[in-house]
Every structure is written in C-alpha cells, then in structure tokens.
Length: 248
Ligand code: HPA
Image (cartoon, rainbow, N blue to C red; front, side, top):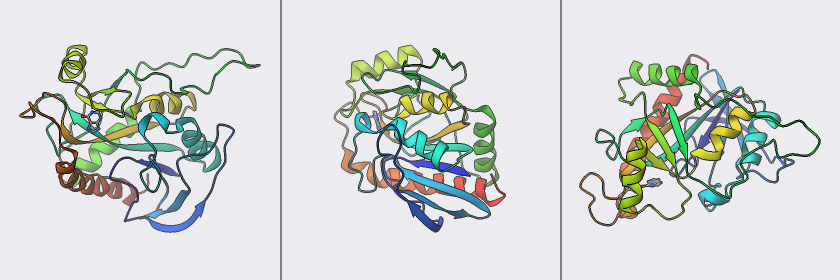
C-alpha cells in the first residue's frame, strides 16, 4: 500500500479509482481528514490531503503525528510519497520546477515532532543522516525520466514555520545554510516517518521564487501562483501514476 500525502493544490488524486473512505482516530488525535483508498493501475493507494479536504489547516497546525500514524498503523502503508509546494531558492529551481529533495534542514518550532515523547519506553534516537529514502527517491526519478518529465534529483529542503512567507534576509540565510527550496511542511513529517521506519520521499513543486530570489525582488503574489502550481502538480500526478502503473 502506497500512501500519498497531498499538499497545497493537491487535495485529490484524479487518477485514483476510489474504493472506500475511512475516518481514522489515532492516539495522537485526528488526522487532517478522511483517508481515501483506491487503486492507480494495479497499485493500492491511500491518499490524505495534508491541509484537510477544504485546505483549512495551516502548516503549523497540521497534526503530523496523527497523519503518519493513520497512514502507517491504521492503513498499513509501506511507503509514503509526500507532495509539497515550495519556494525556489537555487537558480535552476524557478516556478514550475519539480525536485526530489535529498536533504532537509528543520527551522520549525513548537510542533509535536516525535512519537518518542518520554513515559515508560526507553529513549530512542533515530538516525536521520539521510532523511529521505534513497530507493523511493530513485524510483520517483526513474518514473519521471521514463515519461520525460524533468525533476531535479537533489535539493536541500528548508522547513520553515509559516504560515507567513519569509523575508528576503531569511531566504539569504537559508541559502547560506545550503538550502535549495523552502516549504512549511517537510518537518516534522519526514522525521516522524523515520521514527515509524517507513520509506518516505517527497516531490516538491516550485510555486514561486522564494523572497528576493529570481526576479521577485518585490512581494510574492499568491494569486499569480495558482496556475503555475496547478500545471506543475499535473506533472507530479503523471509521475505518481507512472510509478503506480507497474506496481509500487
Ligand atoms: N516559502 C515557504 N513555503 C512556501 C513558499 C515559500 O516561498 N512557496 C510555497 N510554499
């Protein structure tokens, strides 16, 4: 069972032949919405929109623990593909670009970010040297390549707190830190997936130049991003479809 977590602009997977929906409650509270089960090609897929079906949950209020727990422990997912919209920092990652990040830097704060929160169980420190699953990343890149969709194979993802966008100076700092794209939901999601020992990879769709990058020396206009993002997410859907066609 492959889980897909949809981000901004991806609240459903059109190609999913839906079989059932399930409301799941978890020890960590409610996930972002009902889980939608179905099939893409021969592949069983469970889909969850990260920000809720009506896109009402801001990044800092997403119940990441409940989402991960629901997908892995309740639905039985054996791999997770996260789709996320991001701002582009690196020069080759302008609006409309796609990237599969290989590294992440966490700038978020105050989000419940671990399943190992004390109590009876011994302390656990998971390895996070490679935050994304290498094999799953490779498979995404191969799927994209097979259908001639350009997707950067490496990118450092900076996870910011949001919901506001960054200042130009903040983006300068992220760039100095080595970040290539910036988004608000990559953490604690990736860390929690690792705690559950589930292969996790992300596809980032660049919606805009990050503050002060590219030609966006002035304010970022979100109303102008929607068309760019919608087109990019169409390509993301095709990559996921191709990955599923042969069975994940
Ligand atoms: N910054 C942070 N998150 C984002 C951006 C951005 O510029 N664009 C889309 N998600």
